Length: 174
Image 1 (cartoon, rainbow, N blue to C red):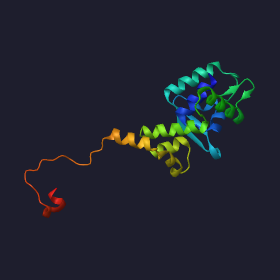
Image 2: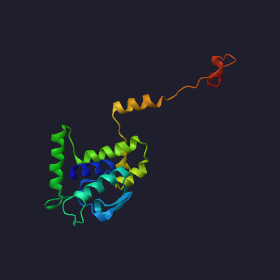
Image 3: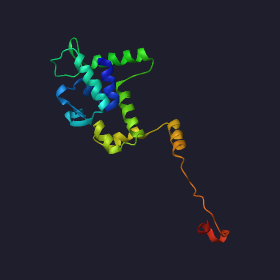
């Protein structure tokens, strides 16, 4: 249940690995979490309703109910080493290479595909500069082709001409 909640949270919020480790119960509100990110910078991140439900269910069954940290093990809080082991375990069990960074990357790409404004995404990810967020705009060839197919871009408008035009008319004749 803990693994599921952790993975679900990262895929739906884009939290960094350290932010996940250090997340405390007092920072969760109904539709947002307050995160302390890189450089001790504080930001609020949108928490979708489905994610809130997953976290609430996990919280009812977690180890160390008295702990201020959201994610705990039998020994206490989770560590970066534990997070690395968990990522390896997920990769082995699923046959898909998993990392906490790739989950964050997937979050960002999903937001872009859903047309989330780049400035809003920058704030959710906790990037200081917009050009850091812009790396997620890069798409592969398959994505670019699919986007063009879906958009059905019209390059020429159909028109009915009542009079023939000549080359002498130039572009105005078209």
